[in-house]
Image 1 (cartoon, helix red, strand yellow):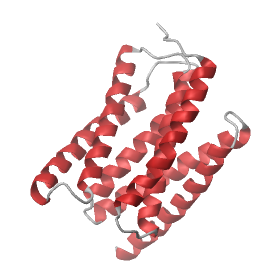
Image 2 (cartoon, helix red, strand yellow):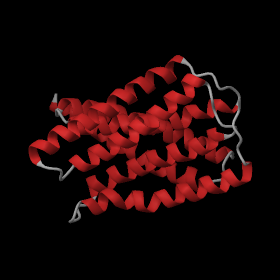
Image 3 (cartoon, rainbow, N blue to C red):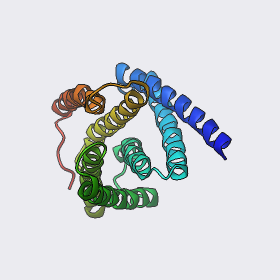
Amino acid sequence: MKEIIQYILYFHAISGGIALLSGLIAIATKKGSKKHILSGSVYFWAMLSVIITGLIVGFYRNNIFLQTIAIFSFYMAFTGKRVLRYKKEIKPSPPDWSVNFIALNGALFMLYLGIINGMRVGFSGAVPMLMVFGIFLLVMAVEDFRKMWRKKFVKNDWLLTHIGRMGGSFIATSTAFLLVNIHFDPAWVMWLLPTVVGTPMIISASKKWKKKMNPQKVK
């Protein structure tokens, strides 16, 4: 079994590398171009491979933290891609509801683990990040549930959501890459570096497109 897990880890690392490379290409290329669409698709499927292998390894090692982070990353990448459907229709499908249900429960579980572990060992190490990821996931999942339930979307909001979710998943992937390959003290620097660099870029891109499209609510 250990040999199988080792091969899965190799596949996990290769998929992560492909995700990082294709993600950078998607960021650098023009939105809507063939290169952007192709690199974005490669990024999504590479991320899906990273997430599945991460869940397997996390389960084998009884690493609940790794499993919950995989759920967080999956939801970001999944909704970032699925939201493109709202260019032509705003009716959610069963996969959307199913993944949203998983995300809601995953977020609550992450918060539960963060609180329990914080009470036992103190709010240090991975505990604060677990709670931060849990809060972010819960906010996203609740907001998505509200939109799907009411079928109340914002015109062209699909693009802003796509930018935010795919950008967020890339930040999560970059964070994992740095933590695994670069050992730096204090460790929280590697945790926060991709977020500090990537978040302003996402905000800037979102403002640019929001100003360009001037979205209005669809009633």
